[in-house]
Image 1 (tube, rainbow over the protein chains, first blue to last red):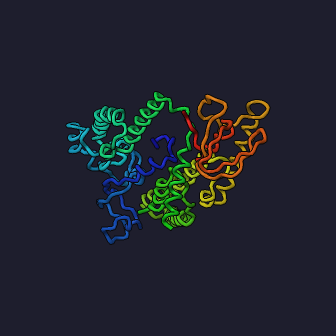
Image 2: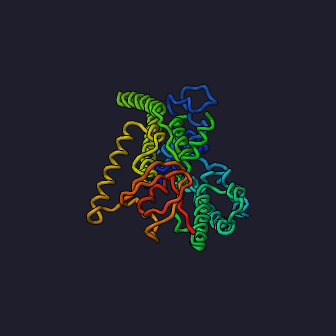
Image 3: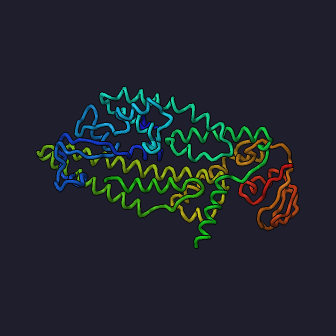
Length: 201
Length: 195
């Protein structure tokens, strides 16, 4: 997490902190009225409601300062939490995310009254879905998995890919394919791209 | 919204990281730096106004400051991830990068790459006794000294360690020292034949 700055350079972390969440302005912010496209005023007045990206909200709302107050995005609110607890495996987390867990755990930093419930719900959702993800990553070999992967959040996709890779490597080892030297994947991808460019021109 | 351009830069980078390096987006970086400069100047103005006695400007300063930090983070991440990619390419493509990749690098990146190359070569020479140790070889444990390979494209003549000259022509097959042809296999010029 970026809390300790260890993945300061991580693109996924940067993208996940870009998602917007509903905020309410508590103190006047002068000369930044253009951030709220629905109003003409030059300043942001207290009481204005607007959506700010997470990183900005985080800087403006903490224990020390209270320039805006934040609210949870709807996919972390009670209504959705109930759906998750009913059957986590059916939800399309990619549509609600795509960095559902990462973003959710960042939201915990705001220390809202609902925070403990959100944390619990995130954990339970993950636990509920993990089994199915692992199961299918180990069992659909040479099969179209796009339907299944479609509904996974980004971090779940990484897990799924790892599982498939492991299965693949194991099969290669069983059939003694590991000794064969292969072209590096990067070189292959590079060639493919080059070919596409050549065909287009 | 603030810092939107910096994000576009990263998105563009992320899309193409699987096998190539996107062109160094000088224009995008310049625009971000301009945005940062404008934010910084506005902040300076507000701070001096506060020192002069005006009240309530603090929140705006805070907001702009967060945008500055965000822009900084995005820019640094952009540069860092490109460097990581270039470093990875050294191990995948070998010490000479394909011209299209080189073309997409900026001046400083080219310099960095040649320095990295030099450092890696020096290090590999310094370890493993007399002749050094090539770390980019034998990524998988070798089973035999010689292997059979087939050419996938015309590569021209190739001089082996014992002085023979092989003509690497498309579809021709050779029996070569593993250590000599591993790089050519990784670069997709030869194919390893396993029976």
